[in-house]
Image (tube, rainbow, N blue to C red):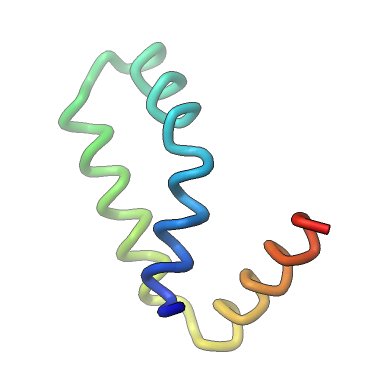
Length: 63
């Protein structure tokens, strides 16, 4: 699984809740789309070490 796949998988688990909360607060679909892009870009900019830590933490939560 690539790091982008890992992000997409983790993000998909929380997307509905994020969307609901964001829209309740801001009522701004375009702003939500910008936030989602920026979250993806920020994840991609993380070091390999931090991405490995993210993956390990996700695995621990699944146990």
